Image (cartoon, rainbow, N blue to C red; front, side):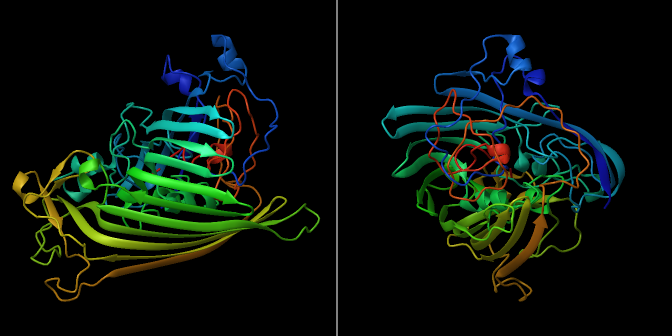
Length: 478
């Protein structure tokens, strides 16, 4: 499929009148490697007038509270496209899906980065301790609706495949916290502990090691969420997560555990993750000191949910004719995932390599197919609701009706070298998005960032975002 067009990231203030100073704090962005020095260079001050907001690098901030945001709008042509759907988090069907069918011009938002707005807190509590928090929501810049992947599928129930608009499942499910919603504490010595809505460690890994910056339009890793959710996109973010990260010398350690299940707006009934990594100085080659960054991440999920549209199924859950009407089906499975990630950076050269393995297996606790459950978007799912929804517990079980089903195992790997991120992508970006304050991370640096300390002190938290925005605890995609 050939796709081309012009994309522009425009100032958030132009569409969000009255919103405070906007900075790019995206959960789908790249990262910082180490905590910045305590004596960081001076940065922008708070805005004291409307002209200052547009003509300077000031921020809309008060003490430790900062407002930020980004708007990414555009249009494009697709040789095999699908009609625009404002609920669809990715904006447009940039990668061919089953509903893509014909050439068309279409709106193309969120191509380079996800449109979002948020409030970030970074307030000193005591010497060496900081209270941190972030509330962020992704939205469609044309309709101003919150991104809602499950709703994009739900509104295509009963619609023939060749008449459907762009849709797919997502951890963005229409919540005002669909990207982030956490609070916590951070210490230079003891690390960072945060609670509630946060990225999975695997999603952080995708942002950190994707050479294309997890762009929806220009990266298959960015467009798809199955890689960060161990096969299911809804588990790329966890609403009731407890997350801990700490840097120990050149090494970093991370852990995440989910409390509660579907009833607390999660895409599974359990999620446990661990990570270990580090940065090793290697080589010079006349370009300065090289750094080899390595990370290994493991993720296990219980009764994870994946929503999709399908036709009539037999007793084993296998689609059979007739294939209409399209029914929203929740496939339940236990999943596990291993990510091995690496990047070597020296001067302008970056070399990437990675490997991922994940397995989808029968669930620990099959969901009642009649009474079902309520998905993260608020839709009751189950045959008893008479709303064209269904549940499959045996999609990956050897007990399938045809006798051919089994656990699904997927593997992927790849390498890439680049001198400048996205250097070959013809784009024009018009923006007024100040560089946000820095953050420490548990993953390696993918882009250089200007360190600014005003009005916030240097952070000692894990995270990464494009252009230096902290994402491990302050940003959010899928």
